[in-house]
Length: 242
Image 1 (tube, rainbow, N blue to C red):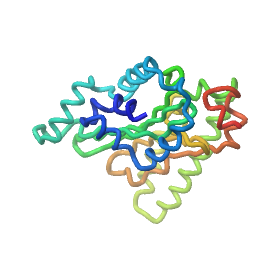
Image 2: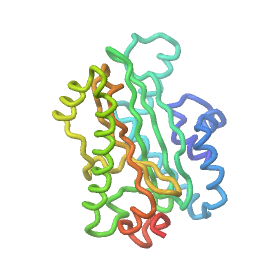
Image 3: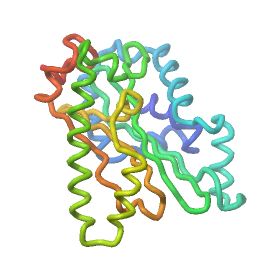
């Protein structure tokens, strides 16, 4: 596991394998440690690992080649760049069990102001394929999954609005949500992370920098009971339907 994370992160994180393996969060390290004993040998295939590495780089470093990203970060750390551009790129493991690898990656960017983006990717380590909801829900159940997520997302928005009532930003927040309605779709439903208890979907509201403190909670959790009727039996996430 550490070797794979090192392969994925070495260009962007600018550390040795030993160092990059140690950059995972404590939660990620604990999850990986517990999961190591449950991972079968057929999940440690060099060809699959190479496929995942290539897919990962293409899915995350979208505005740079790996070499360009490395140069940006080196120059930023050396303080030889104007204060703009890529300032950080970190990864850590969110899940590693049942032949599934979950990764969280964080971009840091400096333009007129600092900003950051957090994304999640999950891979089937038997095949090397990106693990999409479209591939693991039962036929005809995607609409049910989206409804469950959107109902909870709307409750998060309502709760956030209640907290803003006494503040000065309610009107601006309402205007932004009106102009950019928050809704999970088949296009953004695959930004999620796994646990043995269920799936947490992550919605990116993209409020302007000065309004980010007003963003509702973008994390929506579905437990095993909710996922059971939706997920394929025998699919990559079948363990959550048991």
